[in-house]
Amino acid sequence: MKLTLAEVEHIAELARLSLADEEKARYQEQLSAILDYAERLQTLDTSSIPPTATVLPLRNVMRPDEPRDSMSREDVLANAPQVEADSFRVRAVMD
Amino acid sequence: MTQAVTLHELTLHESLDLMRRGELTSAELTQAVLDRIVQVENQVQAYLTLAPEWAMDQARQADERRAHGDADGRTPLLGVPLAIKDVLCVEGLPCTCGSLILEEFVPPYSATAVERLRAAGCVILGKTNTDEFAMGSSTENSAYFTTHNPWNLARVPGGSSGGSAAAVASGMALGALGTDTGGSVRQPASLCGVVGLKPSYGRVSRYGLVAFASSLDQVGPLARTVRDAALLLSVIAGHDPRDSTSMPLPVPDYASALSSDGLSGIRIGMPREYFTPGMQMEVSDAVRAAIEVMRGLGAQVREVSLPHTDYSLPVYYLVAPAEASANLARYDGVRYGLRVDAPEGMWETYRQTRGAGFGREVKRRIMLGTYALSAGYYDAYYLKAQQVRTLIKADFDAAFREVDVIACPTAPTTAFKIGEKADDPLQMYLSDVFTLSCNLAGICGISLPCGFDGEGLPIGLQIMGPAFGEETILRVAHAYEQATEWHTYKPKIPADSELAQVPAD
Image (cartoon, rainbow over all chains, first blue to last red; front, side):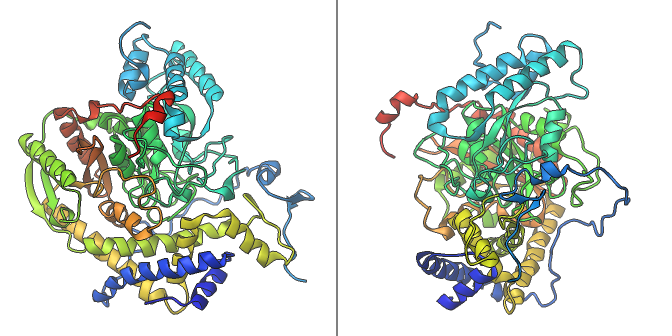
């Protein structure tokens, strides 16, 4: 199965990745080859097999809801590429 | 101290014995390892960040603590210099994950595994190279440089924990932490001739490990002997309230579980699907010979079958990228990391930040994972892969009803040449074909040296055990190691000045 260029562009859009034309062409080839390889899974009948999302027997791990100290604002902002008014600076969400 | 041993070649437990007897200080040991780094790091390039001054401070503090009798019980690893893979947070040191998108990131806290090592008295030397976000099998996907295999500098060290494996193999650390999502501790251990252990899923906290594939990632030790790996595992293992997927189970003293009683009563399974015609003959011969050694130590050996082995690679390369595409959505240039501001606004800023910050393999996996999770394809790819994952796990459950451990090769080949597979993702993915199933099933596995090929490159033996069966795989690995000498060989790394004369491989 070969992905179309439009499909590659659609996936890149979903993933919010800007790709150069040369990258799109490369991923079109490589993703198609990997998906072809994955086709072998379709030969197995799994209609009655439950999916494994986690191997652990744990479900809904709870802890007491107790207030604790959190990190200082300074530490939280220390790695931010842009800070303004003691906050993360973001681009306008709406025009 | 005056004696013939080369300090940087000591094993972790040998160095601890010497320090306990007062014959060696952590400052002497740490300085010796830092000197070794000066000697060979230029050739091997294992470290992304080195902290020599901080390391010496930690070493002197360790010596003071020992002088005050504050040792052993609470600080079982007091004064031992270690390296940490650069996907694990160490407070105050950069954590790049081998990616440009985190080039400037300095975490404000440490991973639980790192915190536990620090509390046990370890000295942290620095952060080791990795494929970007641990995605790769050679360290060639690091955005910074490729680490070289200490046994042959023209070869890859394996990956993604290639920096940690190369550092341990070349005497630039006595042990290290790596992470293993599909073989990233065991495969580089195999290619570099050291011991690497992937704990069962849930054995070690993932808090402070930068997430790649959350249902598969585990932190594991790399070391020069099985006993050293056991010492490290005993410290890092255990429940952590900050990781809801860490199991609330007691942690055995893994080192004291190692016995010298041979292997009588141990049943070893050889999976027929792991000895395939396509693999390097010297690898399968060495692993078969290793299994004969274990039979000679009293183990019963029988063939077992893991019939869904052929599906583990496609399952892994749908599940892991799907989880990665979700985990890596957080890199948007707002809270940390690179930001490329685009005049067009918010969405284009996200696109360009991620387009510029991620490398080829990471983008490839984000694309693959996004596709596998997208509307219309979720059932055919992601759900299907999760169902086949159930079958792969069931294969192991059935095998472990018949045998105690499974023995097989760690990787189908010895270290390949730098550049050889760099442009062929499927070929690169195949180097993990014998290690991925272990992560999908959540079980534990260890790789240890079992020979060399005709070119002098190390071969790894993998021993897998059931979930939380670390004591058994360590016991079997230790018995084999004690009966052989492979772990005593050291690579001869040419001095920097001789590099020009190394023939092209």
